[in-house]
Image (tube, rainbow over all chains, first blue to last red; front, side, top):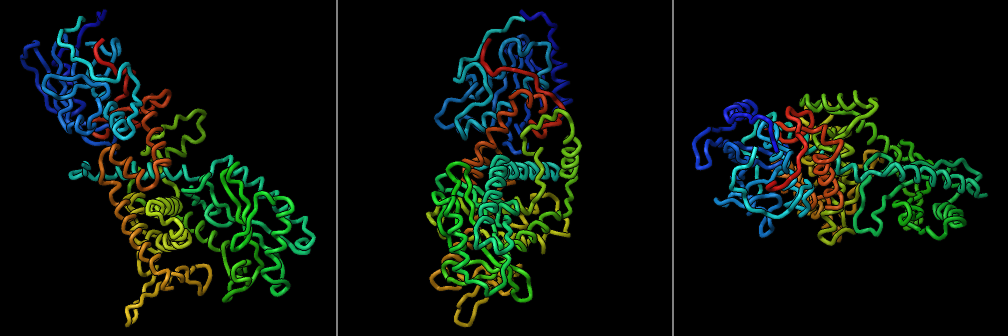
Length: 151
Length: 414
């Protein structure tokens, strides 16, 4: 069980703005409580494509990284996307870490965001070869967790 | 659906060009001979000269055996559609005799007889000499071309045996080799400071005890643009003609090599470029340059092509294109050039490794391209290379980046 003191959302937002000045975000009320929503573009490599993502991070909930564009399911065709959650609004959410890889005391900008960039690199390779070289614990979409996580 | 680059800063463009150049370098490296092949060639080559010296007939003369052709000037390609995908290694055997002492036929026969006494199982005749086939075991074959010294149009060169014409053919393979090597050793001025810094940083770390080399393309400088341009062009030619079922009608390497060499001397050396990629683009754009490959059309619309051999005065390397039954070879060449130029232009316009990899595979062959992309992708995750990469929002994952990437495991819910 994680006992480290969580990093406040406002600090997370400040760090995101510092490292990714082109991004846009705010903290507002949501059904899950106070929630940080952050929008930015990213690419896995200088030769990679550009992806628009949304980071949704409600207090005491696992942060989600949604892919807004391009439509990565359309790019994958009828193949199941590797390492993704299915979401209610149809936008895929990336599965980026396992248990203690991340905790609420860590800045998302130095963890979740680069992990997402890496995900896109492995995704672009997977699109061509069908081979996921990023490793991990499962390779099929799973349900999105709705309940808060214990901290 | 290609994701084309529309708005991009000059810095981003420069980085993308550098990364594309690095990718091409990594692909071209896989065309090179391996150190084991170099060693095997050296060993076999020494054996051959020792064996040839044992011949009573040849022993009357001083002999020299030296490499010529693409391997000797550092531009081998792995040919496709050969069972073992083997390299051609050309060797020139110069018999220091005077002209008229013996005929072309006699030298061809004597060399053949001596080689046959030891290498019967792997030898076969070729137009200008003998081939020894080590393809199955070591993935190369030797073409041994026998010659005598001669003077042609005031130049020192050799006359090689020609089994087809049963006469001597003036040739200057050593002059050609040395000309390419001398040109390749000279570099144009590159504006992009990043590429110079990269070269320097590689040199500085060369003597370090432990250097982790991340196989990312932007870390991979192209040191000899002329040689790499020749290799990549030849490889594109192999794949292009093969896909059309015309491998036997492919444009000979000496034509491509000569045009690129001349283009490099006339349009690259002494000039300033924004990047090495711009050099590669320039060379591609001159493959159909009529100041190098001369085209004359007479009053009856008959076309005559002329590509002077820079090392053999009076020799037209595309003479056969002027034969009516081979005019199609010239047409194919110009179709190929247009496709190749379009391919080179598209390399820095496409965004997305998932678009770039198929483009390169289609052009250069997936057997060369796919392992490079796989190695790059694995390096992102592997130990110890992972520690040498990081993330910057503007450039993505690269080396020397601001944010190191902590360990993690892709997963869903805990």
